[in-house]
Length: 297
Image 1 (tube, rainbow, N blue to C red):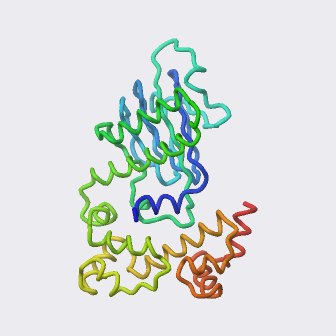
Image 2: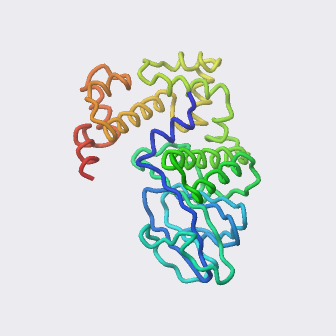
């Protein structure tokens, strides 16, 4: 069980999008707050990312920025350039712009997450993840995605979805590899003992796990495991188990018409009533109401 892939799959909604764009100075694009997360790769030229908080960040060729929390931000040729609100309907494609002077080219991707159940792995990321293009796997993913966007062929729709997901995975891998943190998920993903317990939880969430059983998977004593897990993950072992079960239940209600009794069995609850009680405690509404709101929202 790949915990990182599992988390992103459970929290993501809809399909990601990607495009290559070109801009001519002076230019500026404002991205409003949303449930989305934006990723931009500078392919040619230089520009600035303007976060809601903090100083402008200058980007050069090969730089990658990921804005994970849905906060508004802007991209511009200069921090003082006027900004235009982004729109899918008005965003120009690279081949629609007349090249009359210095220009920049960007590869842009957008992801959508269920913000009602954000994972601490994502919550711990900074407002802006800024990476250079020095990571070989990340560069390879960028090249593949850029080539597919430039010359779409048969099967491109399915390929692009996979490549955009791949880009996000390599961005997160590179960020966690660059981090020198002493706590949090940067250390969890590199900790074989804790990952063994997390793979158990993610692989069989319906199992009636105990702290002792999870500690045994980690090869640690119960007390040592509980302290280490809670300190790194940010939840107690059983607290994380409950949260993960609720996340899976919410995803099942959101994306399928599977009966509640089936979701209860898949998430380790013996009855619909037991699941409904835990779900309402987590989300503030009954499962049926949650499903209706998602269908009508």
